[in-house]
Length: 398
Image (cartoon, rainbow, N blue to C red; front, top):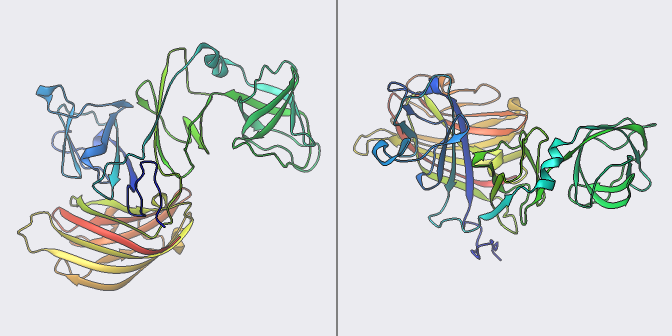
């Protein structure tokens, strides 16, 4: 039985979306500071470009636009950018031609009572009683459904409530509330805390059908916010950091892509990836899979000269093993390799890859690396000309 998406589509290969996001300084541009080749390919149907946090308008200057997109890897700004400007490019790369009607939209106008949440000073000297999951603080002012972010707590002995987000289940009285975790589950801490709980009251929105593996975009008055810095995502909930300034009438827009049932990861593929010379492009990362810490898979990669009539190509099959946060345990093994770009498809693994410049000049190559956030497989191009590529990762044991 196939997977049923919100849109009503069925099948594992329907409506798969992959968020591509890259950030660059203006100094990375060429052609008199007007042309940028992002490190990740974009889909022109769903590409957003930001300059210093403000979303730009696509189109020619005569039509009121700020930039023009070309192919899958070139952005031409109508006005030169400064070397210190911060450029962010966000795109959803769709794996099939069907537009993703799985997108869910939440719009919210901040009301007066909500603005006081982030205007409230940090609360200190609270107590926590583990037997009843009760937070004790005189005149707490909390109501059912409020979310608090515990900063710290000291146990009377052993361990007690830890830093994190919690939701108010019941208001017992003006000095006591019963807490659950952010997803509504009962707590299970071993010991009490006596006058040592420090917390912030934070603004949080319920977002139906949001899961921790969906792709999500959160905007405040049109500005894209940064996950795990400006906001935090939990099951069917977005919680804003205390430092985010919210005022009455501010507009919050949340857009998320996903399904009621998360598909098992069997394969991922993309085509039409343009990689300019001396740059690399992300092929596959742990964020493309569900809760991926370690994965092993077969990877097929094909590249050719960007000019269709030029006889330059290379095709290879690899076996890959990837692990989050352990680049030394990320491996690539070449199974088959053919073509006339250089003599081989170069590979760099076991913590040997960090940038396109690590590949030998004249070659194309695949590199793998990892950090605390995940693992990443890149296609690097140093062939001396732009290439067009495609890949397919299959038999994924995630």
